[in-house]
Length: 341
Ligand code: PEP
Ligand code: MN
Image (tube, rainbow, N blue to C red; front, top):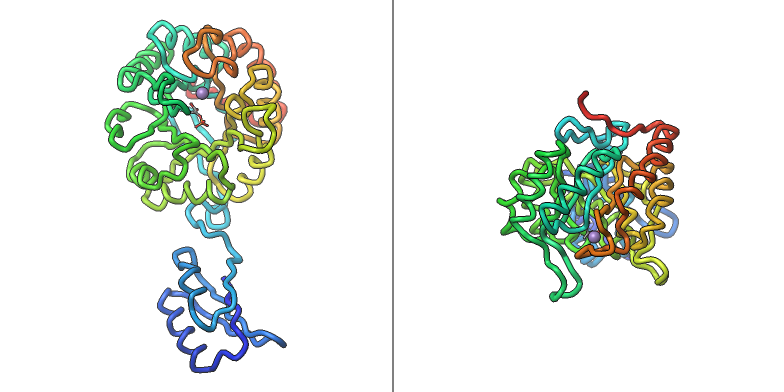
């Protein structure tokens, strides 16, 4: 962090500022430029509130030269984080494919879909039990019963289950869930993030509809700062001026995030595009740019799905896509995770 001082700052004022800064456990370096005096801060500045410095009378400007997140930062943890879930490894150099319906609807629907995605090569099962819907009149999810049905589908297929939490008060219902998803709309629900940080469960954190990558990383930092380092980031499209797709898939987010953080990065092409025919090509693109996993909506009968039918693949479309995804994954040096054999 560097602090640019105003012209005319007195030695006494500067000394007071420097003494105050030393209280944050950092070293300082005063640099006299031709036109400006600058204080450089050396050490961990992540916990320093820039606004407090900016508010000092003699401060012209404060700039961060390092990222404000530490736990999620690759600079401090060069090795990739690998998250183990029932023998599968997310971020360990393989590709995980999380597939399943947008919402859990009935026992028959989730079991049929789970069996089909397993057969096609999916490595995990998704399904929403608590649904964040734009309209309060739309199907809100089966809640607790939805989680019970996912557990049944896991019994039948052996696939680990991934499902979204919306409210802190439901947290006990997620005890048997393998990966807890935080949806785009809750990416900045800081109370929820902190509570998940105190759990020993992997968290799949989706990028907010209009969130920057730094904001996504700061949300990961919220979880990690409470002690839970098992965070998986998910690019799921951002809102832009383009109405032809539901969102715009920010494909460059994948390699950029992989540079900035050691956390695994996955891509959800279903919510990114909103169009079933675009899902396969976006999967191939995502794998090519180095994602650690995909989250894909698949429904046994998309035309009659209770949510997101238009972006859901049929089991046979998914099976076809998986053949190409597997080939692309192999080619990219990140073969599909086989789990414990
Ligand atoms: C979902 O995955 O079910 C979902 C609601 O996605 P998002 O939070 O990305 O909109
Ligand atoms: Mn959906």
